Length: 130
Image (tube, rainbow, N blue to C red):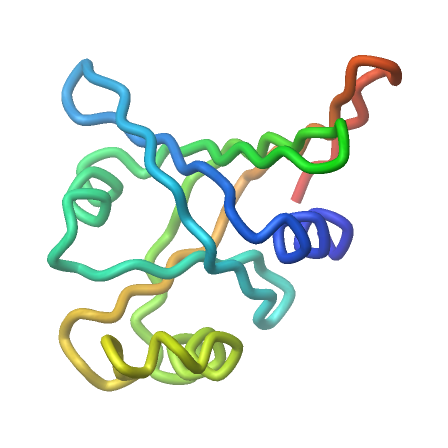
């Protein structure tokens, strides 16, 4: 999982896919954190992405860097603990202008039953489960 985290962190921007009814939705994201052995992302509860994940927690992210790409598929589980939110916001201080660990909007979610696949045009895919 550390390798997945490091790739996403170094990449900076990845794309998160969710589903709204039968319509796929994809948008850029940039937050990623490791907390208590889990891979987390962050969003706001007022956003469509939050509503979509609560209706269907299955999601996939995709990132591309240096001729390699990473896909992570799994379920995103909300973590309402202040400690998890604080850890994320401490990793991204610029978010503190918009979010607070104790507000009603900040949401952190971790991957559960995830499969990460590293791929490139020149190497065979490699999969990690967590």
